[in-house]
Length: 343
Image 1 (cartoon, rainbow, N blue to C red):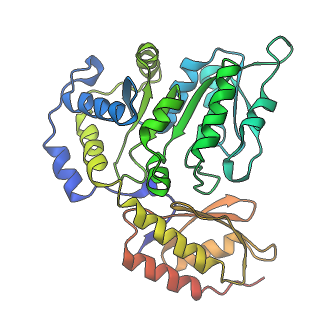
Image 2: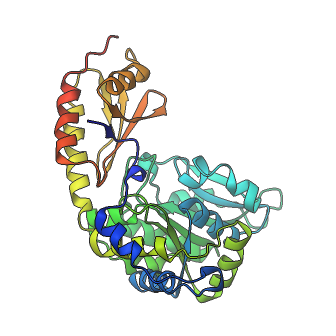
Image 3: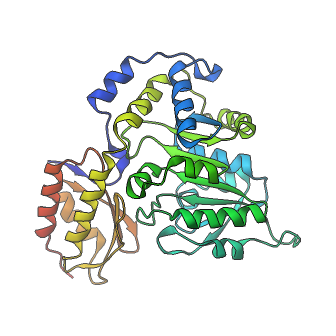
């Protein structure tokens, strides 16, 4: 038995998804002639109540495109110190857009409107970068899968409007947030200028993200996608996976959340665990006591054919997903009881 809990990106397409994929009608999407891509883009735009959406190979590329079309070189964006756009996109913020980041230190990757207001550089102070964009991540990855309160998002939107700032949502795991708190996708569409959503995490697709935006921003996004090498040809085969996932794989995310909560409960009972971040969705981030080694725990688990990921600073991450079955879950929980770490 091999149990991979490194990420929800490790999932493979189900038989139903593959069958649906193989029967897709395709064309050349660079010329916008792929009917399945067009169908997916229309469906996702309608889902969020936004004018347009555009299919991309990856969530990093959708985030980078959003930042590119909403900023100018020399600008500054505001985001959490845990955010994906800052930590895990290869420095693309500075390389692709010439933009710097003002980081907010908030618990679980979350922050408040007052934090945004304090982070805005004075527009008439030419010594500092012009603040032009606020980026939110929901759910938070490095923040342990935490979900944003919609009222907090609305209050931040007010600060953005008052200060002429654009507002971007990195919604890579927005599907998990929806299953957790039931906030309608249209609520997000009403708040943000751009939204990135990912199909290849909890929804189980092999590839694909979409960027949602206005008609006005769409042409800029299309041009930027081309510049970044994101134009694909018969990508309807991939888009078909997205259509299948949206119909079949959103509601089942609740099972990932239940299993994550049960893992949290198990970890809290182990004597070598210092802290477990409160679990809301499918991500568990925990910390070992100072006298124990993360490396030793990872090796113990690997000896039992279980993979998790080291986040640094003695913190580790577990992510549940659709390929993590009940059998895997029971095996993992039993294996945790048998871990014997030496301090």
